[in-house]
Image (cartoon, rainbow, N blue to C red; front, side):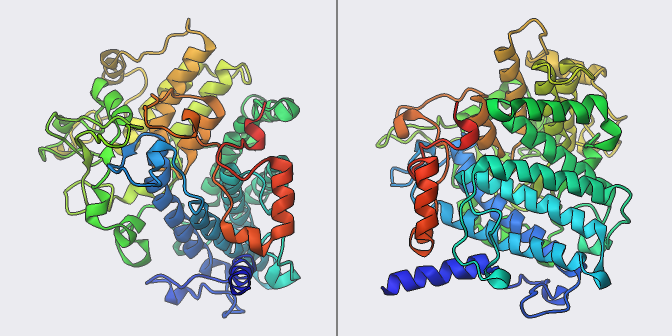
Length: 522
């Protein structure tokens, strides 16, 4: 009985939207609307963004990277994610963290909709951020509370129903349409309230439509909504591009750049010990392609500081080498490369760029796939793909191909520049228009895999959708060597919201990692 009461209290607190304690530096922002009835929109945005990215970054490191062979833990213990051994408590942190921040973004929208604080900019930004979080939630768990989530405080709905993923996605599309309209010509919001775009509503509009493209493509293979999604993609790119502006350069990337000061200190610094940061080995799949391509993001000759590189990867005894993922228990391979900790000159642990929401390179690979599949006719798949590859390089190396240490910025390279053509040729990865659709998908998604580096669970979501890039299967994998299709619901949801939990399981399938979510099912 005590256990059930405690669980019920937990879920009530979550869906009522009670805030987590403020981070250092947030005090002046008065971020808690429950104790600050006169909070302004500009006081709510930054904390919600930072807290959402904290959840994303910590789980990207410990969960996504292990599933997707970026890193490989050296352990024979239970719960080794790289072996598809997923504990039934893995889902608690993202569920709690994302729903808590949805309360903040919903409050932002509510306050920005009141007559005295009316602000279309904050309204549109809020809808984009809600869509972003809800999409991650439903892609992680499947059916989730959506239409009546976070309503315990205002509407006394303590046990919200679970909504079908199809209905959630279609409403997210509506929300992104509304955001696009709200932000069309909207005045910029307070710059200091926005650590992503410094208040620029036109940039937020590009992010919203770029996110729209990501989610439309995710459903484009689902028969019952395929025609609708493809038609909207075509409208956005071919028919009415001026009505749906998307990212057009790396300057449009949605990145919360950590300054290292106060609340803008990287969550990796605040939440991960240095020894834990450098503990996992780099996965063989992740590092081998970069080595074969002589990729400048890990090419030490690009930098004057010997031994360091842009992604902060240490060389092992055999140089840049990795550990094969999914190895059998009892015989762990020798650790080779690993990520430097933040005491190093170059380390992702403290890097300003790790607050990745979405980037231009990903958008170009979305368009490359849409072109290959005939969804759009503007542009060519090759141009989109090459632009995506180049954008991925120059996002991390703005002065490429000149060494950073030289201090002489080179002219911005183009896909036609000699340096870039030489890079493609030397890496033996040039576009081949005579390949099959499947071969082109592999070529697109192998590069997209690196573009999605550090972006929450997006590598995992895209692999589940496409099966690309093809990952090697180690002998120690569980779950019949099949990539997990979802994370299970938090255990306390079963006792705090039993009726709706049981209805969701009856509709979607057993609450296990092998049950596919709606968009994955044939």
